[in-house]
Amino acid sequence: MTMTYRGTTALITGASAGLGAEFARQLASRGADVVLVARREDRLAELAADLEASFGITATALPFDLTRGDAAAALRRELDARGIRVQTLVGNAGFGMKGAFVEADAARIDEMVQLNIATLVSITREFLPDLVADGRGALVNIASTAAYQPCPSMAAYGATKAFVLSFTEALAYETKDSPLRVLAVSPGATRTEFFDVVGTDEAAVGRLQKPAQVVGRALRELEGRRAPASFVSGGVNAMNARLVRLLPRRIALTVSGRVLA
Image (cartoon, rainbow, N blue to C red; front, side, top):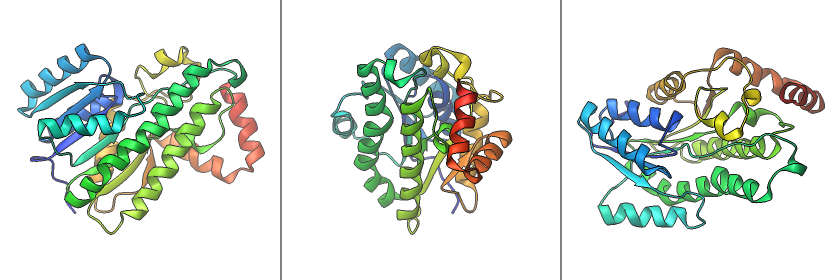
């Protein structure tokens, strides 16, 4: 199946910077209208204006707090009120934390789990029936190379991304008889604001990629003759992800703990 973009709309969470903004730019360059969702209204408005001027598409900026428990239903109501139907969903919103779990701020952990898992699941459930019924677009969720092994000092973050990877791969299988493409993207370390939020570059493992590289690869996978359920971005990252699955679990845990210490 050939992917079509013109005449479709992509909803992108976490769209104010990094991978989210890059997904918006590359999808808009292919002719898709975009709905940009994140907290920072000024960033969204600036990006929307730039995309409309550059590509002649419609870009809708929706400043929104996705950590709300009712985020999915509220987002649906807003799009319905505007008469917007979505064919592609990019679940990019999320953040990480580094440090010993026992010392972490409990409220911040809850916020991360809500955003990385609960909100992603509820938004996916809200819009997936429409995506499947239309069949022209894709569901893309952002996992991480942290999903492939336990991550001491990033215990909760790594676990949230393991959930995203497993959840999205399962959905890819469940929808395999529909035209919808479903893809989990596991970037390695990428030059985004992720490490500003984490508070240290020490969480970066391996060579930093650019957002354009990760998103370009993701769209090429979606546009291929047979899209995979998931992929790891970057040759070394992919090799490491395969290798860690061959190691005994306790050894993978030890190696990960030393790398992330």
